[in-house]
Image (tube, helix red, strand yellow):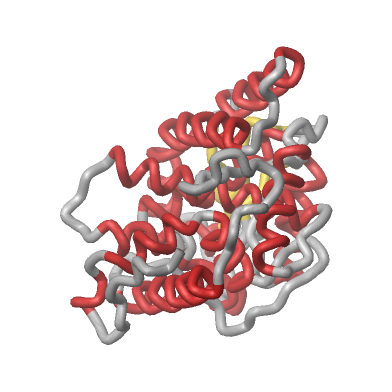
Length: 311
Ligand SMILES: [Zn+2]
């Protein structure tokens, strides 16, 4: 699931997850993409690229200002293990339990939307696979805090109804938006299942992102990125469904803030954390735009202003 410290964690994380499951999905909703699906043929301009970079800067600057901002995974990785009974871990576990039901629904919806956007799973047989995927998501019943998992979360094949969640990770995600994003990521692995039924979607999303960013996104990287995309879509829908006095850009930023690392390393199975944000915003220019067009500028120095020109 997430990257970060890629070595141990990744290892554990994705390895575990992957090994166990696998399949993510993602989304694609951009405005202009009418029929673009898996073929990233829409234009992606220099202005779009500039907007994406500004959105990354804005999201990560907001992380610092926001009292509920997530801890970057490289910081999590450097922390000592955290007891299950630590108040922050307990708070995270309660948050995860509370949000699991709604996140399952959001993931199912996101998968359906992505399948449509990428023009996949639309014929009866394929549709049946997609339905099985969402049924697997619904079957997930619990989140289990685990000290040794540290800053990782994963789902094991032998017990696909349980999301194992490291206590450091639980404590480092201090907002509902961040938690929904990460839970949705794990649920997407579950959705694909041992049969890898969402692999076509993962690949389509990866091709799209790769064409726009020039990043190499194949194999497991495609699945991890797609899981993150579902997480982002789920978080946005969660925000839309749960009005708050907080600025929307601040809430949106929380979905990716754990990737705001200083140590931006990658591995074979994952893009680096910052490239993950880059790929996500590149796939969803609307989201990048939303981060830049409202509000946050008041809170700090980041020149957030409006870049609507982009694109
Ligand atoms: Zn993953």
